Structures are given as C-alpha cells and as structure tokens.
Length: 138
Image 1 (cartoon, one colour):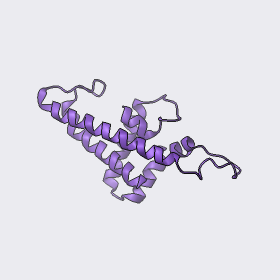
Image 2: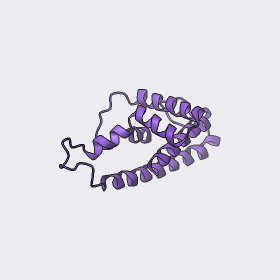
Image 3: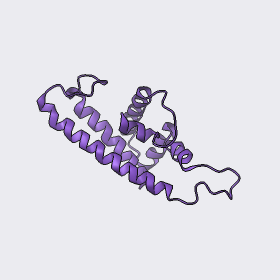
Image 4: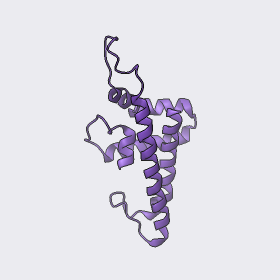
C-alpha cells in the first residue's frame, strides 16, 4: 500500500506539472496566467489538499508501528529516522521501480524529485520534512 500510494502521488505530480506548465507564469510565482487556467489550478490545489490529508493519515498509521523504536535492539531508530530513510531519493526510486517498472515514468519522477530537491535545498530533516512533505509544501 505505502509504495503504491507514493508512486501514484509522484506519477500524478508529473502529470500535473505537464498539464499546468503552460498555465504558470513561472516556477516561483505559481500564479495562473489567465482565467481559462483557473479551473485547472483550483483542481490542482484541491488535489494537493487531498494528498496532504492522505499523507498525514499514512504517517499517523506509520507511527502506530510498535516495532520501530523498540529499546530491545542494540540500535534504536525513531519513526522519523526510518520514514526519512525509506523516502530518501535513491531508496525511493529503487522502491518504486520494484513496485512499478515503467522506466520512462521513473525517469520523469526522478527529474521531478531532482527539481524539488533543488527548490527546497537547505531544509532540515525531521518530522514533517520528508521528501513527500517537501513536495506537498512546494
């Protein structure tokens, strides 16, 4: 479930970027050029809101996993550390390749992640700062 949701969200992000590219004045303003684009932009904002809610629920469920952070093991990893680790770009791309083998699609997702990484460079890690959180904020 987790990797399918992540893949679908990234795939949809690539499609949204392609669809709205002509409607955005520039990458920084995120403002629609004209009224004909407003419905697409409004739909995109609703989609982002839905994805933020879904992601929040996934993270809540992830935190319910009791085997993470157990003190019985020699090294204790926090939920944030594990979540951030599995969503690190290299691990993320490998994992979604395993779930969905479409190499052209993976290339577009990799390009999207590289762009997002450059756009949010310097942000620190921790809670609410995974690759997915950064994409949903940006």
